[in-house]
Length: 223
Image 1 (cartoon, rainbow, N blue to C red):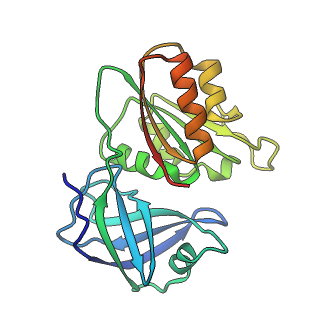
Image 2: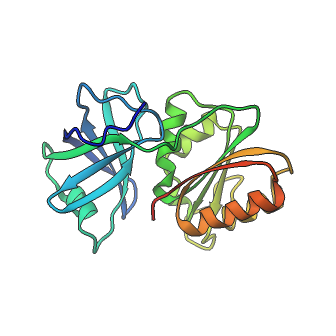
């Protein structure tokens, strides 16, 4: 599916749901001619600003959903956090090539924070039998955990702040995702899919090169 870079879409805000104090999910009316693949993004445009957000929905869902981190001193996410229901926004898409490609090797999905969104889209589109590591500050940031617990072979919360008042869920690892890979993932060839912050993608890529030679690494770095 080629990227649609030029056509302006109009998407209407249907509802907003706060997942934590600083992360929210929005649901949008889906343009009838929009087709996308799990893992792709929409580019939102407002005046001189533009931002890319990964789609959370499955490709055949009737509406579009996004998971957004609220940057308090930012310009774009506060606008989406405060917009009234029924507000319309301009967007283009779909964009990006962070797509799941099945192979004979086990897929390992690694996300930080809201970087979990494309993996939720993949899971909702029927992708199963993967290992998922979600690197977050505390258990309150484990967005869509119930979905992944149902379809992942192994779902591993990687908690950076295990002393937080939120209880650690069963099977949680106290430390970054790269630390879990170093200690617990058996040596083999894997397909690594990484979405999130630069520190995580850099550390996991180094682990893949050193401990899992020959593995493929696919990245979506967005902050």
